[in-house]
Length: 412
Image: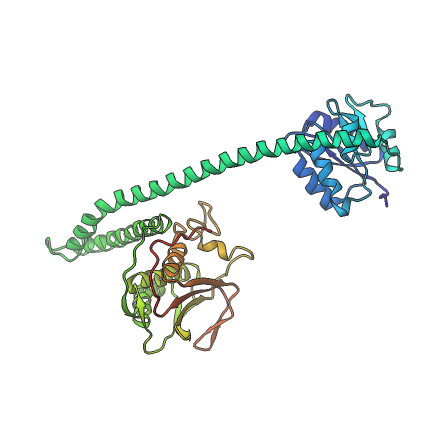
């Protein structure tokens, strides 16, 4: 059924031609929708189901023949007339691939609107079966050749992306090591000065050294994160297999974050058993828990609550859950936060700092132990009987893995 104001979709890359068609049709009572290439035209045709589609054969990328074949495969567009409008294409080839009409460029301004109305009223051009078969075969061969070219282009582009990714990893690895080398003596000398082992400090000097120590520790943490995530991506992160207690590991991570929790301030709820003995790299697992705590402290607002829970959920499997009362995650982006360098708000003006590698490191460490990670947002998790409805991050660890996998890749 044609609308009271017929909608015409015009697929044309030349802005002058788009403007001409609009000037010729709009005063005659048509609503003209423009698309500058084949993919945009297909997308708009699906969304709007126009009453008629005008398509230029010589558009770049997918040409008009390919676009027509694709449009004819859409059940929603059955019955919609498609008219080729071109200076270069073949009438028989256009009709063979599914066009209902063919208009030659340059457009005849006197008859153009009348011809469009004719197609809307049911006018269709016909071609013989023999000529249709010939043109379809020729068009199929041309499309196959076009696809081969595109596959070759995509393969080359994919190879370039792989090379860029390898160069990026090498850069992060090299820059991290270059930064770590001078950082070691800086950390040592700052500690000596702050502990007054090189002489007494005045009150003002002591305050300045405390601030400097905080900055140095933060920088040291960023460098360690870059080293870890690069080692994970390149398969060079190593694990040590030994006995550990998960409860002790979690408590140490929590104690390390108590100053930042108190500074915010926000509450910390703990739900821990007396002991959870396991086998694995306790130091690395502690790093994974710390990354989740860093994330929770960062996104929990002042006055909010962070909950930490550790337990054995089945024979041979531990669970660590860190939930908060923060804003949670946007729909559809939950799993992406585990990708290296991904941040929900990656703009320079974002309100939360960080490099976007902490959760990737946590996943890499857990997967290296044969475990998995998960995020739930909004959260429905309870810690000490209190529901924390922001986001909840989970680490699932085998209590006694048979072996550890060095440098499990965290990219998805």
